[in-house]
Image (tube, rainbow, N blue to C red; front, side, top):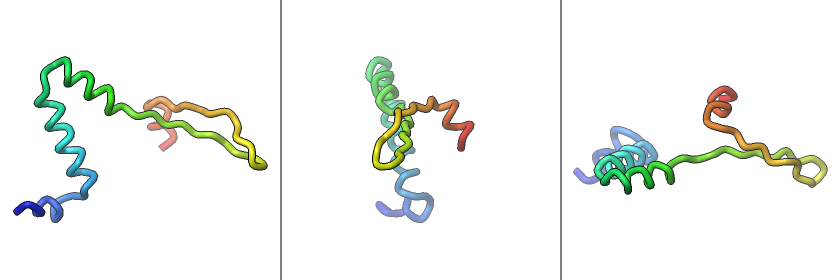
Length: 67
């Protein structure tokens, strides 16, 4: 029974579900801090001739548009 989740979804999905359950069980202050840690950003940098250009940071809205 311990490994039965493997037949239903991937490990990443399992980790996402358990993280959400843990965050929702926290008190308000700790829950907000945990949610802030869960936010990620996307950066990219174009390289030419072995030299990196300027780093570009994409917000979640911009990343969703390009996906």
